[in-house]
Amino acid sequence: MNINENFLTLQKNYLFSEVQKRKEAYLKKHPDADVISLGIGDVTLPLAPVVIEAMHHGVDEMADKKSFHGYGEEQGYLFLRDAIRKYYEKKNVTLENAEIFISDGAKSDLGNMLDIFSIDNTIIIPDPVYPVYVDINQMAGRKIIFIHGTKENGFLPMPQEDLNGDIVYLCSPNNPTGAAYNRKQLQAWVDWANDHSAIIFYDAAYEAFLTQAYPSSIYEIEGAKQCAIEFCSLSKTAGFTGVRCGYTIVPLALEKDHVLLHDLWLRRQSTKFNGVSYIVQRGAQAVFTPVGQQQIQEAITYYLENTEMITKTLKDLGIWHIGGKISPYIWMACPKGFTSWEFFDYLLDKCQIVGTPGAGFGKQGEGYFRLSAFQDHDKVYEAMLRMIAHLGF
Ligand code: PLP
Image (tube, rainbow, N blue to C red; front, side, top):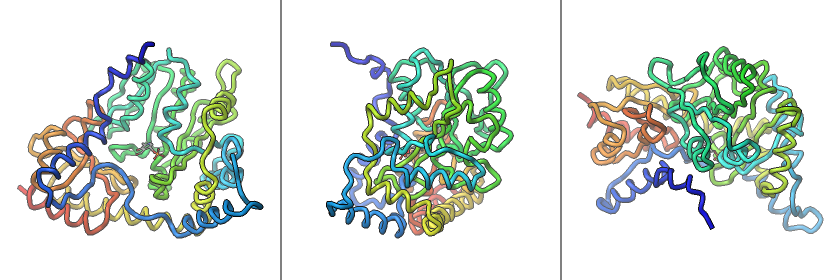
């Protein structure tokens, strides 16, 4: 028996486990501390009423022999895939129901999708970025090339002429920086991918936060169906982090040497995945109804009000930052010359605020820090008062 030694090359703890560990250690020492978390990007508002109602109804159906559901349809129930297809129609993106696969969230599919790609592929990953992209490829021992997000390029790396690789991960709006690619920039990525026979893994987990000035799906870009797979999630869109539902789009036009990637993914999913529960899929369907859209928009607006409070405070403190407005994350430069983890400790110790060190998202994140707007208004307000008290010069 041999273990997969690639696991030994990983950092000991996943970033958010380390953040949690340090928070718990602090609380052990200071049990009465009122710690405010602006760290892990987990939603705080409950599910939309229309979602709750749909899930209750689903439970009732499961209680009756006549409407009970066992194993579901392979790619997810048609009622949900059709609702998603219509949601894309509003973005002027035409999809077929067959191109949509319902998942238990974007994280699983981002990792699982690699099953259908050779271990020899070279992976291009922006730095800083959602750390999962790096870890899932490192676990498999794939070669990774990092492209740098910097202050100068607005933390939105673009393909340079000499860039070569097989799969590139793009995340827009980006976690952790909150920066989003515009149409022209995404077109450049799609053109590069088509020219290089590369595939774009497009992570649209935060698309619901975008305004219409930005493309919210890669398929709004010409040529994307020939080179891109899109991953999306209801976690941040509709507060589904604890419910678990997302979807992945694999276009029927996407092929490599006459093999449809869609067929490989279907084969993989029908072998290794038995779908998302009927009740959850009914809840997810409700998100895409007009009432559902209105209710989730209220929650998104609530979180964006938090980003306003945070960015206003940072501006008043004269601290460089981007993000917010079209994203639930704010990316700030660490003040006072702190490294990311030093600032994490300082903020926890002096202000009892937990954030996420930029260095945890990649080398280029060193010296930066991520604040999440997934929190209650009064807690963010209190956190900002504490920051003003301790970071005012
Ligand atoms: N993609 C990005 C960029 C994320 O930030 C997250 C969660 O934080 C995910 C995917 C995971 O989403 P899910 O909860 O659907 O697995």
